[in-house]
Length: 260
Image (cartoon, rainbow, N blue to C red; front, side, top):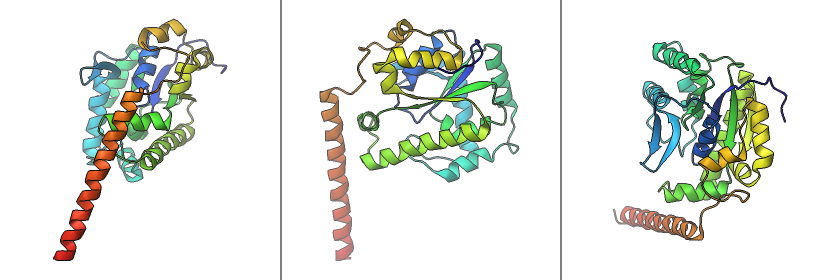
């Protein structure tokens, strides 16, 4: 338990994506946290609770930095530095207007997987006492299965390196910024809600409960969330098929090179 003032604090969730962040953000929003005028729905399947205006502004930072990569699969320190260096070189007006709008609806919660790349720009418009940061992670195996099911094909070692790098850069950021941070593992929130929820409440000054979590998470609590056997098998088949195709492609290129 953390000893913070008994008032709700604005929250920013820093995570890599595919970590259960939509559940966490929806859960926090149940206690009156503002998520925006509109939020993004993922493929028409579920509400991500991501403020659509925040997404637009983060995309504009990507464009200004010339970043066209996949923030969900690649960790590139140069991109972090490039986006951070945009401050003072682009018009900050829309960013300040957005933050002012959020403050009018305080407490607010931000969640967008792009934030691990863009937060170093946003820090220039925030103060360490204006918000609290939640660093969210998840079982690496479950992240990998989820990624494969979404056709994000990479081996387990690559995913592990990416996830650990994102978590570490988020840790580095909050330390350098001098902000308060709470690390949460999604698996533990679901499997041990009576332990994790009081930590969140003590950190944010919120009044969340297991009932709030049950209203957003519609699977059984008190057991770590994991893909079904059928989805796990499907994910591994997807990986195996793509690995075989890649191997065959490399062999064909090698054969073509020898015959040239």
